[in-house]
Length: 321
Image (cartoon, rainbow, N blue to C red; front, top):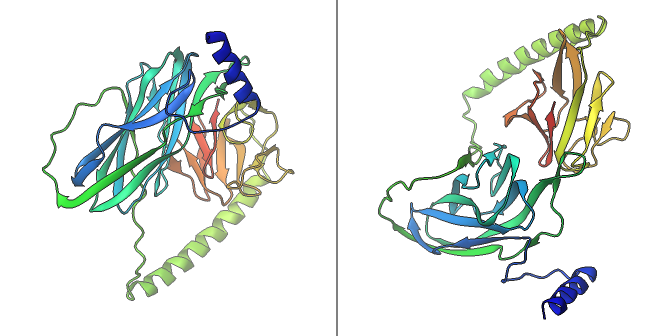
């Protein structure tokens, strides 16, 4: 009977039939919630669960939510050795990434994700994507193949009545902040227009000064750091690869003329430049969305240190080493 079941599963996967399943396979991820009815101001806790016969060294997940109904707070993983990697969050979607230096076997709770209810509404939490990470034969992080996403929707009913404040529950494991970006103030007071115009002039003067200083610096001999640097690509195009930086400056972007080409819709044609100065490595943003260790680098440069996590756009992620 077991042999027949194994053959049946093999045929299903060969035909590439993708279905939602309620019974979890040996390699699977799914969402659960202990309750789905809440009042305003209460804490919603959903569980990200996983089964894997293969020990893993990390995982990622993206959960879609309605920002009018819910505000994300944090996530925590009880898996020993799993550490959260803070990433800038997008409104309406939490993006969680955990990694471990040693393989861990998972069979049950992978992480708990918490939200605060904001008002009366009926809404859903949706697991848009999730992956388990392993170390491949080359020693680099790579997604575990064949992982099935099971239950991915949690329907919530939130009453507009304000609930009784809940006592703080102890949180175990590595805590990952999931604070959404601050709300944008769309109204600009009229009295600030003159100030903004003055600031614009100052910025233009400073930009011109910086441009000519950069041109002058470009004429100076380049100080090349001793040793070599490597980019370990963790997520996005070429994930799992390690690229040695053997040419400076090193241009990275979507255009094939770059030294490193990332075919990603959220990466601009020339996104960043890695260069050397004072026997160190630096990264310069060239106009895209660039983050180092979760901190935005906007049309400026920042020093690179081994272990720094660099994100370009929404999903291209690599580690400098």
